Structure formats: C-alpha cells, structure tokens
Length: 409
Image (cartoon, rainbow, N blue to C red; front, side):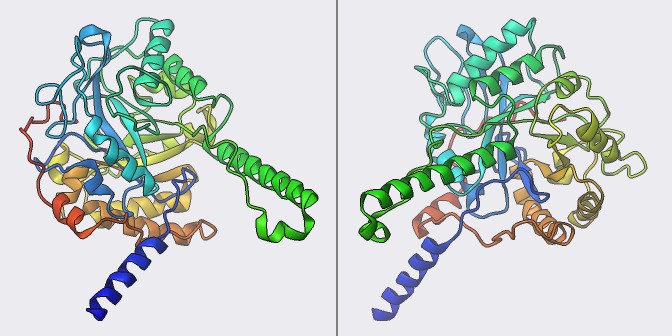
C-alpha cells in the first residue's frame, strides 16, 4: 500500500510540476493542425488531440455558411457536432456545440490557441459591401470571441481568433471584416509581439507600484506581506487572425485582403497546386517570404508550410516526414518569416503514424539549431488527465456519424 501511495504521490507531483508554455507566434517551430472534418473517418473529440505538446494551434473547421437560416451562420464539425445530428438554436441552422466548451478550455489551458476557420472548399461565403463584412464581423465577435450574445455555440468558451480559408465566392471586403474584428478586440496598431510586450510592461509597472505602496505603508513587513498585483490587462486577450491561401501568388480569393489588412500568419496550402511540395522546381516559399516582408501590412506576419497529414488528405502534394522536414529546415535557415507547419488535418495526421508528432519533433530540433536564442520547448509537456479520462478519450466518439461534407481540395 505504501508503495502504491508513493507512486501516486510522485505521479501527482510530476503532473503539478509540468510547465505549460504559452503560445508564441514569433517562433519558427509552431504546428497548426485543422480539426473538425473527420477526414480519416476516425475523428476524436478536440481534447483528445491536446493531451501532448505536439500541436500549438487548432483551427476548427468549418463555419461554412455566412448567412444561413434566421440570419445566423452555420457550422459543421462532421461526426462531432453538426446541424443534422445535434440540436440547433431556434429558428436557425446553427448547431449548439456547447459541450465542446470544456474541450476548448482544456486545450487553451495546455498553452494552445483555438481558432474558428471560416470557409472551406465548398463554403457559401462572401460579402457585397464593407458594411456587410463589418456587421458579420460583429456577429462573429459576439457568437465566438470576446463579445456577448444570447446564443453562444461553444458555451462560455472564448476562442482565440479567426482563420479565413476562403476558396469560393467573391474576393472583396474581407479586409473590412478583419479590421473590424481587430477593432472590436482593441488591437488596432498592435501585433502579437507588441501586445505581449505591452502586457508585460503593464504588469511590471503594476507590480512595482504595489511594491512601493506596500513598502511605504509598512516597511518592516514588506517582505512578508507584499504580493504582486494581478495583471491589469487580464480582462483582455490577443485575438489571432490567420488565413490559408493557395500557394499560387496572389491568392485568387483572399489575396487582396492579405495585402490590405493585418494577419498574424498565413497557412499556405502547398498541395493540390502546381507549386506544391511534390513539385520542388515550382515550390515558391520565397515568393511568400517576399510578400511577408514587403507587401503585408504586418511585417511580423508568419508564413507556414501547409501540408497534407497523409496521402489520402489531399489529391496531390503529400510528402513524407523526412522530405517535409527538409523543407522546414531550409525555411528555418533561409527565411525569417517562417513560422512553422500547418497540417490538414488532425484525424489524418494522427492515424498516419502520428505524422504530426514526427514533423513537430524534426521542426523543434532544426529550429533550435537555426534560432538558438529561441526559448527551449518542453517537449514532454502534457495536459494533466486522470487514468479514467485517458481511457475514455482513447475510444471512438459514440455519436451518429455525419460524413465530412467539406473535404478540403
């Protein structure tokens, strides 16, 4: 019994000591993996993929109809939550996926960011004017981000941003949409790094002020009683805006917005195109690096190499981990805009021998070589789960199955 209790105590202690590292967009080894479309017919709940430190960002795919029944958008996450198998809000086709709130918060607590991807290969999207785009931005802000609404599809969970995977409709007015989201978030004029710096400075100033006040009141007891005050900016957060353009430059649908609005990262789809990873002579990361440095309004924007998670995840463009790792190390060495890898999608990458983990390990290793000042990653960081939770999440989700209607092409 004593040995069992000792082992249990050691396990608990190690769990408490695990270090959760906050997401950092400035790194060159981030991994973004789309979740939601059950591409390998074995998709698990979102939290299942957050049990280790492999993935840094999960764009939830997709919100695929901008203006559905009752004027509300429509979301579909295949076998996990959709308008056919789950309840919808009255008078709309908007699924109530509030049971995913805990999944989202669990992943966020593990240092990951969770965003909502708009569009997809068969999305019914687009705007007729800037004012319509801004109104839709307000609607998205209130439904999924930092606003308030009588309906919240993810319950009390607050997402970390928006991804635009626009592959249909009209190309106009997306810059107005992006700018309105950033305005609602109070981020106009700020980048991810300047926001983080401002938060750190505000916290340091508040702590210094608190320390000075405490010392003045009771010098003798300052060491015993003074405590840092809470971060004065904790009521707000940084909301990330990303996009997933096709590799041919400029992108036909989102290219104009990329040139006019602030994006934090682009997940360039180097597959299903002539400039894909399987076509090295036409591979054009250098073009996107030049865009990032000379055209993008955000000169800190990061460019990701978008790749399929398996041979079945795309029509063409799939390469193995070792080949993709060579592309990654080349980008880390030669292009400062490089931010990491994007995979389509979690289901296919996971069932393909943990393709996600393979490329993340290679990326972290080479990233440390080419950016030695970059903070060392704790590759063993895990979310703390009980044995029962691990056992439960390892089983397939028992829900009526809705085949992916939005397979990414």
